[in-house]
Length: 239
Image 1 (cartoon, rainbow, N blue to C red):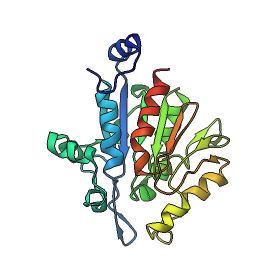
Image 2 (cartoon, helix red, strand yellow; image 1 turned 90 degrees about the vertical axis):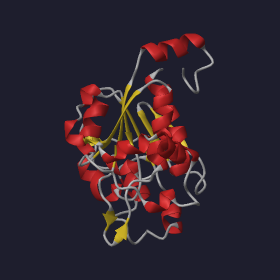
Image 3 (spheres, rainbow, N blue to C red; image 1 turned 180 degrees about the vertical axis):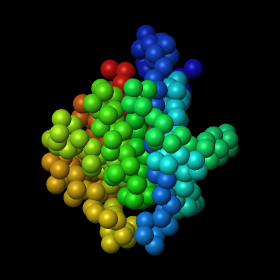
Image 4 (tube, rainbow, N blue to C red; image 1 turned 120 degrees about the vertical axis):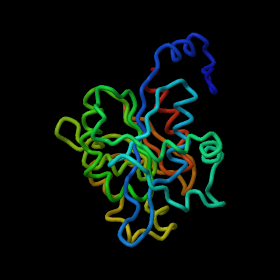
């Protein structure tokens, strides 16, 4: 059964019969310079359950494959979510030990590519994820990204232009970067980079839920937006 099934029973049945393949891509970087980091847990676990509970075939992947480093801060008392707890209690957390390497993923085998965030993405997403993102988008797939996940969009292209050019995009904001005191640690401002590439940057208040859809590109601003971003990806793929 779908946990959050559509009100329309015909659509619900169609979703069950049309099982979509989702790849959640995470960073393999455990440090950004001298700052220990990794993937942000909720940005994996929240989308994972949105997709899995909708009956999708979900693969957790990372740039290098194998163990995904998780930012310890994301599992602290202040930030650990119900999705994180469910991930641990169900045993799904073991999936983080044996993630699929990006190199083994073909765009043709994906319906939704979802880029999870965390500051580790600042290290390996711009170069590491660009080709798969470009290939997935060119193949008509849905590309989603949340928080720092859009680091994987900055070198992706669409018809020779930056993928984000002219598109509405949400991502971790300069205000939020300042509030976590990492403005001087990141290689560049994600908000500024997306704007430089011609994106129509859509921001909401710091730490508020915010996600936007532009065609087959779905992006969210911060960890609080991870579930919303994933749900919008499903809306697009089942449209």
